[in-house]
Image 1: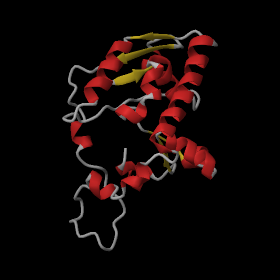
Image 2: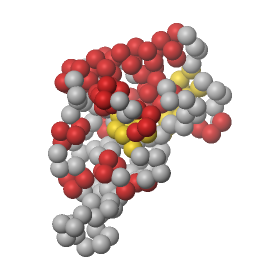
Image 3: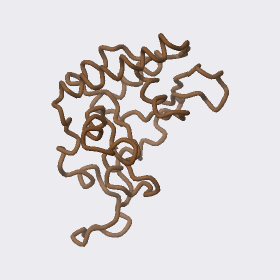
Image 4: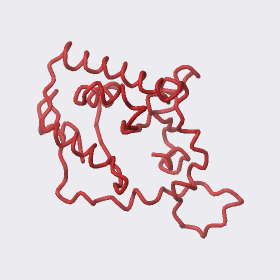
Length: 191
């Protein structure tokens, strides 16, 4: 599924959710993660893909720093801010939001390969605020119940400057990436 301004095909402030006809494209990407720098103890043959289990053995890395209800509260507050900015202070138009909601529902099944969303952005607020403006507040405030809010990534130097800021972004399901390090970063095995 794709969400975005479709390279100028839509006027500014108009977004459309589109589901490709062949929804199985890229499903093989969900099975493995890119090759990372190898540890001396790694006995896999060169070129063997890493599995999710290899990438993150300790799931505590994904645990919310302020409890699961704290994560829901963080996501809910950001959602309120997003709705305020895009739906009250500005005039935004969203088309085909039902396709996005259906894709989220489809991706939550156990047999699902997940859902990839792509958003080109003019500011750091565009990406998270788009989803906040299109989805109901209850979706974010109840994350501790359904765990369907997506993970995102952010440059470490932007979102993890201090422990408090890092905890806020981790609570908001944002993982740190190192700019210029490519797909072989350990955190890329998580997303």
